[in-house]
Length: 253
Length: 330
Image (cartoon, rainbow over the protein chains, first blue to last red):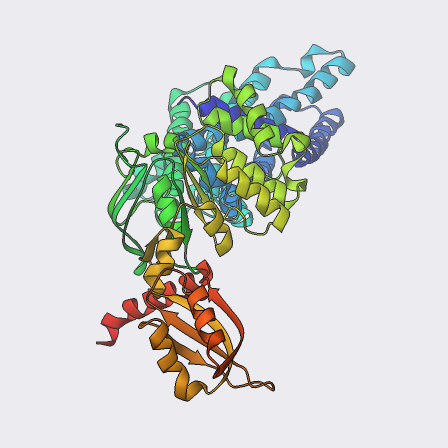
């Protein structure tokens, strides 16, 4: 793994010198700021039971659907299309190093974007001058959830990118997978058929994967290792399949 | 890794892509320090063979050793022994030249201390010092090509493989690239593929012509000429009683001298003839003297034809076609 840091720092550097990263970041902050001010407006209109942070994080799926595919769709698909993947693999690097380097670079940027929304809470704290608005527990829990679930979401994006040479296909595929894992499973969990006695194991399995339950737990300050395991194992599987995807494409190219 | 082993040893290499045979039982060896030219029409299997040599593609069957190291089982080691420039020379568009070379140097495990020195050296060698801070995507084709070559020689590997390094360059840039490749002679083993035949002839010690996945001719350019044509040729422009008397006169001069083809007489009565002879030494002087002193003929021009590598290439690939097609037609 001696080249992992070389590739990682190279990838981060390339992301940071790229104008499209900044455009994406500005638009992301614009959308999140819009959501945040909407949340605050509803709080100023009528008293609410939950903290603004937990309502804000309830809408985490919106940026995930769009930002994760945009961040990851390029990473392997574009290199394959340009042919630079060939030069990369004729240097003494392994597929694992390349995939992990690209994955962590995208994950780093994902975290950076989310971390920048911390500014909203800082501004609120600064100007409201009332510590009651900032409930540190749900805030930390929310960001922790974003960091942990982001592991899985970004790895799904990388996996989508490893399967094709077209960025658009990778983007749509990543979007479909993220849609399935956030909202799709929630739809499935409402199916009547799952209430049957014989379907009980499936019901338990699906309940276990509901990301909105995870989010609730995290913002309440409950960090369940089963949920951590869900995201970490999902990430590992997605990354293994990404590595296999790249290598299979090499063999059959 | 003993020093006695040849730089590259390929035995019965086969590559089949989903039913289509791209490379079929190719065998060749390249000595250390030799420059080998890889010639062949499009789709002959040049790029595939080169990719297998680098360990990027797995072979279907056969054995490839680079400096005595088998490619199939120890591809990680092979990658350190080879500098490779792929076809069309793909480069990241949004990096600066020196940044890219630095990144590649790190990947190729050049120690940090040596890297900046080596970088300056390579930039100087490839005449890239002026553009080292420019963005690759904005460079002209000639510069991009040289960035690719600089990248290949960066880690000073014993073997360098370049897939069409001079494609799309202007004659001046070709000259620079040719000098660059020639400067590697003796220090590194170089394999280049090209369509530009004079290019190969000038830079390469040995030429390998492949067609339809098979080696159809191999040897030095001079060897190939002899092997493919087996004779020397003369162009003669002459007037007089040709059909009746010239063959006899020629046999008198040299028994193996024959008329290979004969053209129509022009306004002044001169015909263009092509003569062939099995003799390798130059008969021009004797021939000219004998014909000029003979009162029956008037000679206007005589020269010895030097078959270019182009003729060899066309003849060899055509021959390859026939040998490939022969079993099928039976």
